Structure formats: C-alpha cells, structure tokens
Length: 118
Image (cartoon, rainbow, N blue to C red; front, side, top):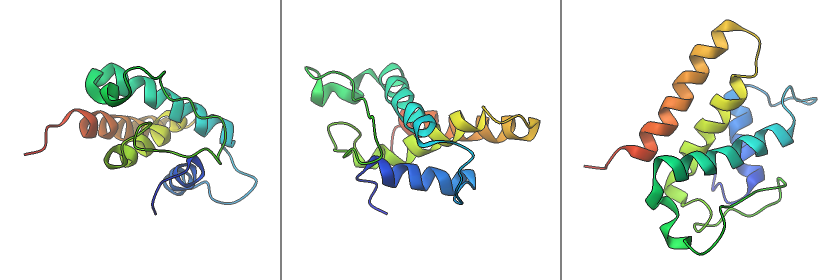
C-alpha cells in the first residue's frame, strides 16, 4: 500500500485496530484527529522533521481524500504515523488490555521517529 492519501493511512490503521467492518467502532474523524496529533508529536520529538517546509504551517488533514505528500509526511515515516493513530485510538477503548497494546504502538512511533539509522 502506497499510503499516499489519508484514506490509505486510515485503512491501514483500521486493519491494525481490527476495525474493518462497517459500522466502524472508530469514526474517520477520530482517526484523522489522531493523524493530526501525530504531526504535532513529530514536530515536538523531531524539530528537524519539518525543516523542509519551515515556512509552511504544520500539516492539518481534514478528510480521507486528502493527499499526503513528502512535504507533509515523508514517505519513510508514514508507517510510524499509522502506529501513532492506532495507539492513540486504542487508548479510547474501555478495556484494560487495550492500554498495554496502545503503549506498544505509541512507543513504536517514538522509536521510529527518534532512532538514528545505522
């Protein structure tokens, strides 16, 4: 999957959330909100992350049809953003088992953004 649209990112996150049958447990708006939060977290964790687009505002996505360009989210980091979405949305679930799973996904996001490749 190319992950070139918000819809493709949302679809991949739904697969990891095991939320692929309509009616969905988590509305698209919740997943898009988590994606926008991931953009803010990426800037906090990696101030250099958006240096290519320093003069542009932080990307904000509004709909599943929005295009994701490398200026908004570099392609090599898009899987990490999916992990953030899954972790963030999983925290909203009521079950205690979801908290541990959510933590794993959120830690994976942080690790992929901050680990220096060897």
